[in-house]
Length: 274
Length: 274
Image 1: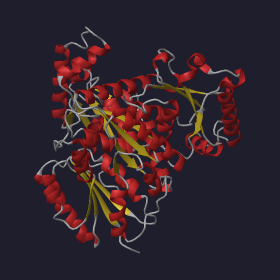
Image 2 (image 1 turned 90 degrees about the vertical axis):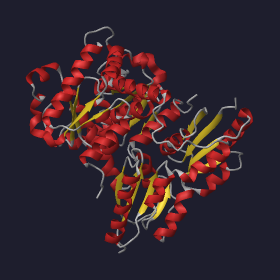
Image 3 (image 1 turned 120 degrees about the horizontal axis):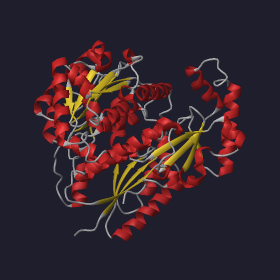
Image 4 (image 1 turned 90 degrees about the horizontal axis):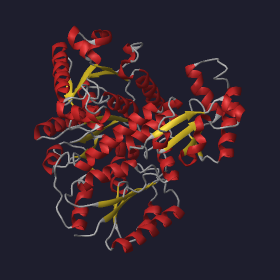
């Protein structure tokens, strides 16, 4: 057994990008365990010094070199960190130099360059989308459905709410969602006058086994959660979506990010920002 | 005027990481405009070929080389893309080789290695946190408050809901939130028996001018949105939080990501994953 490595994600911002990229790289190494630490807002020599000391102490305690992903705009902070013994992988310096050459100008090396007018507008768009999505979750309101970018449909617990919220929060996409319930199957009709918004509709489906598992955590041993009922609902919902010509994807083995991105990709929303 | 460059984000996954990192690098170059295109799920030679042709066509149409951020696990797909004339910045290859050397094993070069048991558990934790947060938004329920990781307080429209949802979605943190309203200031007391959960409380504050602006979009010319009332509420809320010893941050110039990460950092939640 090799000792468990510590992996640091050190950033002058939130560190979320460093952590996400780092995680996807770490999953490429099978069978290894890593201990992860994210240290955000490292934007001064003092803070860099304390991080460096923490890396050194970890190196000693673990008996093996840590891996350190950094996303630091200021080269002098990187230099402080590098006095510790570790594998340093810098998300910033690797890319900024070729970009400077290509663009023919120097980068500003300024921390927190996200607060431009464009960024503020994007922020307001996301907040507005979140509010819209909360007001149109689970079919609670059919007012202003015409303002939506996407309307998700699917049986209860097929992942509509998290997907809608992610679409709003990450992409500023106004996303409503409607549950498909047994009455809709009987009537063989879409609920809530959704037929008028056919070009906005997108379906989520799921395997009956997975749905049974999810519903059982909420209401164990109920008819609602039974495998037979899950099979019936999933089959009927897929039949309805096929007949109505609604594109749909299987959510079972996908992350929220993957489902959301697939929907935008298929609906050609947000792929181009111009 | 130099021509507007096109920037591609090409990934075998969602492309969200490539786009986020790419955007933070682009903001380092002041005064330049970029046209952005994200192309997700490029996981076959066919799709890579079509991307390559799109880059070539863009190169011709723009009259200037595009910048292409790639996050592709398979080197052969990168080789296909590179037949176009562009600046290629690969998030994967720059890091995977030094990691292979450090770890002493080869990477798997397998696409979509996110569907491990650990990943599935993380996914369920996030879904559970989202459900918890939706059920505890805006003080609607004080049931199970003891199960929360964080309880946000602040005046109406200070950013509590988006922050709570982001904490749940990104970090799997169960986050409730309570509005502070004029009655709370009169009673000089925290609402809803929050006093029992002092170690979970965190406050959001905002400048009265910004609050006035946000509230005016909802209810223009109302007393609720008036600058005088916003000043009063913000001042009273801050006084209440100070007296009750609740840490708080100013949300005005911060993104949702920054607010959420700051709260976790200050409350020492989620910084260590072991």
